[in-house]
Image (cartoon, rainbow over all chains, first blue to last red):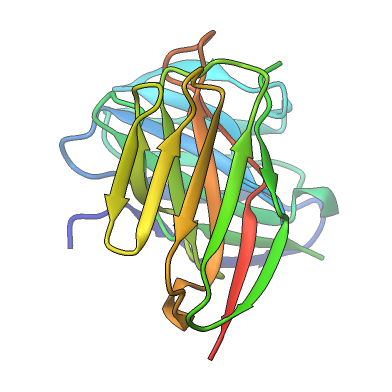
Length: 112
Length: 112
């Protein structure tokens, strides 16, 4: 299967711990996006990359959040010192540059 | 700030009925996408509309983009239980070409 994959699918952590999520986009897609989605809401934009360059970050992305795409392929999203308010579904999507994005299955984060 | 509103927020109908859901904004979008999302999964792209007044059909689903490119509708004919899910519209931002803004979604439940 050549779709977008995310790992892990579920993560339970204690408040104050650091977590890291991985996203593997569709191989030929040069753009990669991270979103956060809470229950009953649509995905909220966090950041996006074109190849290895991080081109835009949302104001939602506090200093505790960092994302990388070192070789222009997979990407990681790290959350430091997690808080209960960070509990959400973290979605990754990729595209070839148009507006159509292809999403992964998401990583469900629960902060206790 | 560009915002997308969707209505209704929730919809529960019997199998075989028809329905329409709406996506509205005060902003003009260069394109608009519709996605369907099932619980615990990422959104799946259904269609992209680009031209004002455009109508696209996908089997029992009919999508329309408003003439002014500020709104869109999704009509489902003879709904089936497999149509159950969260329907999201997403507009490509005029201020940031690569940034897509999502609406809050319409949660559809089709009862057998």
